[in-house]
Image (cartoon, rainbow, N blue to C red):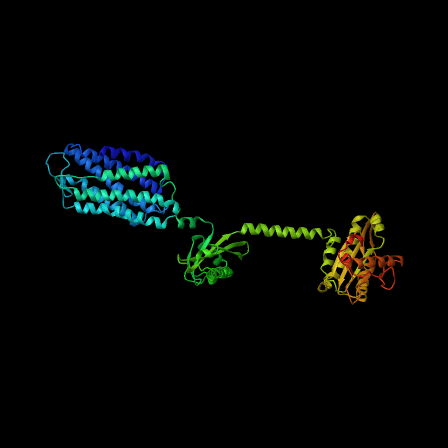
Amino acid sequence: MLTLCTLCCLAATPLAWRGAHGGPKRAFAIGMTGAVGWCAAAAGLSTTPTLAVTDALRVLATTGALTVAASACWMARTADDPHRRPVPADLAVLTVPPVLVLGAVVTNPWHHLVYRDLVAGSGADLWDEGPWYPLVVALLAVPATLCMVHLARGPSRSPAHFRPHLGILLCGAVVVAAAVVVSLALSRPDRNVDVVPVGLAFAAASSIRGFVRHRLLSVVPLARAHVVEMLPDAVVATDAEGMVVDLKASATALLRDLAARGVASAQTPVGQPVWEVMPFLRPAVCAAEAAAGAVDGTAGRVGAAPGTVDAGTVSPRPGLHLGVRTGAIRSSQGALRGYALLLNDISDVVERRLAAERASELLAEEVQRDPLTGLLNRRGLQTAAAEVADHTPRAVVVFDLDHFKAVNDTYGHDVGDTVLSVLSDVLADVEAAHAARGAVAARMGGEEFVLLLPRMVQTEAVRVTEEVLAWVRGTVIPASTPTGVLQISVTASAGVAASPRTHGTPVVELLRQADVALYTAKRAGRDRAAAASFDHPSTRPAAPSAADSTGDFADA
């Protein structure tokens, strides 16, 4: 029987060592190895060996028992927390009893304080308890009792998929403990009863079934504290009043960095209101409180709302953008206990988005700008005109440089570009001077420019136009020729069209009227302005319509 028990434990040992890289499975493998030694020693003691061999087998049995007890204790301790590291209390439980017990048993042939052989000089396994025997049993019971306690508490603290594993381990531990109690109760000086190997064999058989059917201890629960520390998010926990009660290490580092930059409090955060420690989190706290209030106002249970609420993005300092999620921490009865704030550094994502938005805005601006003069182009003018209120009086002035082709042909395109810049600079100054009214200057193409003057009547628009023409007329432009540098001047002509005071004529129609007036100025001798007359049939604006207000400037 004892040999079969030994073989059963031996069969479970390689299965236990397979994939035992650490944590509870390695502890189980070590314990199963000790069980093999314990059963083998019991089988050897049943064969009535010599006294020396008997002492050696008793030491082996004691070593096996100590190994089983200590490894079972550590296995149970790490079953629901596989990343746990031994603390001083764990080391004391795992080392002090084994050292004391093994030392006492090894030296027993000299002091006979643990047990006394009843048949002197015989190897028969007949012995009586010594004065230290109860102490030895008590020391062995310390890790064994802790093993039972941790395994019994495990199912309530472990996820559902791991509870069958704990059930197998607890069942085996209970059977072994019962076997120990039975052996101690039935043994007498003239009869040694040891049914512990049977209990160990049962535990081994159940573990073999667990390895085959449930991958025993191969799927271990991840410790929540370890997982939280591994998360890249900074986690801040508060109580129901918003007082900081705990911070993850990454949150502490973030707070230290922000305090050095003056955007967070440098005081110890725990015990302080979170909106004082991190003022930028006040909106997130409000979002968490609002979400918690919504739950309390409906079902009042933790399952009545999502676990976390997206509180948006905060930017405590330039270049740092944090995505904030909040969640209410509740008891099993649904009572509000506090809030969890998860801060995720999304700076790279936000900065890329902002850069893309800036590039898009710059591209949109470039599309609507004339590259030579920097004024709006035809597309930009159309956009600006659409922003003028429908019933706002407005004036439109069309400028055209006189004899510009001759300037290009005579002095070259560089001088021609300078001439264009002269007029554009003057129009830009007018645009800036009347920016409060929404004035817009644009180059329509070639030597033609447009000035849009919202909230301006015709007489005022004519006055502004005359000032522009005077500035152009009085500007001297250097021009290089084969004979030297000449000082030249240019002139421009302009057509003015303005809507009546009572309504706003569509800009497209005003452009048409301003073009007609421009040609009038050209025919009158150039270097002058002409205003469109609404009394003449050829210059009278059509009634405003939806088609006119959205017309294409290409037709103007």
